[in-house]
Length: 407
Ligand SMILES: Cc1ncc(COP(=O)(O)O)c(C=O)c1O
Image (cartoon, rainbow, N blue to C red):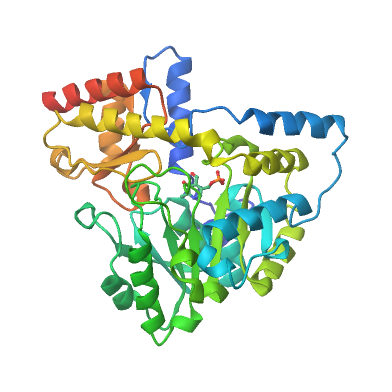
């Protein structure tokens, strides 16, 4: 937030203490260096390096020719809301066999980001606490603050697989807690909760005397990208009894490589959905019509359409980890999902340094861009993305390893 001086036109205090997106900023620096001809290897990508599926491209072109240019309903095109309800029901069979989601439970949003923001704005009152397992996706605490809430972190170190335990959850719940945010597979750690682990968290929550006051925001945006033996599990699939207090967030950004087309959604009960529709109706309205037609087409594609992409992410994760082996003081964890390795650099930090200083050094001296873990809640880790080509992964790791050897 830019400091404000007396005598100047004043801005809202709402943004005090809210940081700008560190990843978007870093990406801009890297692009600038590249434009100046510096040979930088970029391991910061927060998006798949695939193209939009052909069916989605064709749907947009058809929609343009069919003059689909008018405002759409605030909650999204009926056909898209139906498609999203269908997908969610498939992922939450233990719930949907009794209580299937319908299109009126869906709000189509400008990316998963707006669905998260809508949810927090619709739920939080000033002073409400929001539990966030750390490391976390860097926008969660900033969004909580913008919505008037107070982020409360539950630490989940690499030693515990970057996942919170039921005991930690029990200890963290107090009378002011209004929301618990869960994200599996996780950005930045790639941690993935199994059905059993999610069940145990749901049970811990249910045992609390405050359980009925707490909303669960389950961010499932990386659902398709699972890399190990543990399959993806939607929070409500493991805990269908928590249906009235859970909001499922998802989108096509990561699962169909459509980040720039800005299309996500929330699926939740009628009351909170109505509140989010009111909010969205008075702010951004319905999402770009063309992106909605594209999303319908992407959601209709069979899973087999994406198998090779996921397989390639798996191969590139292994390549990255293999190349990092030689950096013996680097703490490495194998991600089960998403496309990031979150590695501990604590043993390479100079006194007083954190991962931001470290990433800056690596960028300047090794010409490799990595994302510092500090804004993700871990000052001793960096995030390395494998959503890039194999050559860049190999070369980037080699540069990083020889730099680490030299210090
Ligand atoms: C965990 C997580 N949730 C939500 C989002 C937002 O996704 P979108 O680009 O659809 O707004 C991201 C994007 O990086 C993410 O990593």
